[in-house]
Structures are given as structure tokens and as C-alpha cells.
Image 1 (tube, rainbow, N blue to C red):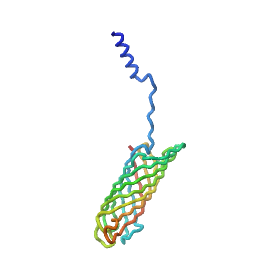
Image 2: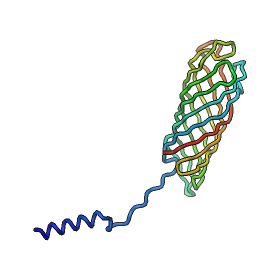
Image 3: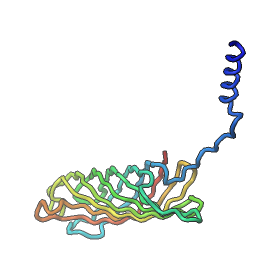
Length: 199
């Protein structure tokens, strides 16, 4: 009986030491396999809309990019992937009738990655809601509650496994959807730079 128990203990020790099989290498995750938080800022200038003010806006945008939603992966290692993006923005209105804008938006991002996954070209579009400190000035925004939508085109470069930087052109529209008359919507276009951390 003691001999049998000794044999069982020896078998358990040998099986748990890993001598029976070689270690498995961890799977390397691609940048699009992970979610990411990014921060962007820059400058937007008025390019249209019914407002008479010459707006200049400094945006501060914090976004969450989900892991890949769906995509195409090519034999040479490049990839075309679609992700979702959710953003919170705080715009400082440097020139214009108002002073600040707070908003939320959601949309999609399409990214084309090079074979070594060191850089990508991306496009994004979406929309949401926000609050502006309307001043009831002729030509300014008609009320505090606003709708927004945006489009963005840029390039991103991977610095490390978790960090990357990007630069983009962004178009942003703000208006109240005709809830006041007049409805002096604002169209703004500008440049953003950002940093992203993947998890």
C-alpha cells in the first residue's frame, strides 16, 4: 500500500513539473486586438454655418477605442479593421459668442495597418449631443442643448507595444437641429494631435 501511494505521489510530481511537454509561447496581440484610451487636442476654425461670429476653438477630446469589431486580414500581414469609438469633449471657444462646449459622441473608426503594424491610416465619423453656454447674442448659438457630428482623417504611428501618437484633420458641426429660429449652426475644421494608450 505504501509503495502504491509513493508511485502515485511521484507521478503527480512529474506531471506538474512540466517535463512532459514544452512551454507554450504567449500569443502576441496586435494593436487592434486591444482597447485604447486616447487624448487629442489642437485647433478648429470656422469654415461655414449661419453664425456671423468668426469662431476659433481649442478642443480637448478623450476617447475609448474598442478592440476590433470586424475586419479583413491579408496574407502579407496588413489589415483593414473597424472599431468603435466613444468620446467626451471639452471645447474652449477662444473666439466666438460662447465660451465653452461639453459634449459626448460615438461613431466608428476604420483603420488600415501596414504589415508590421507600426503605423496606420484611419478615418472616423460619428455624432452625439452636447451643452454650450449660449449667450443669446444675434448670430450666436440659439440654446444650450446642441447636436454634434464629426468626421476625421489621420495617420497614427506606434511607438511601443502600448503607446502610439497620431495627427489628423477634423471637421466638426454643432447646431440645435432647428429647435430655435434662427438656428445658426457652426462648421469648424482644423488639426488635432494625440497620444494613445492600449490595454
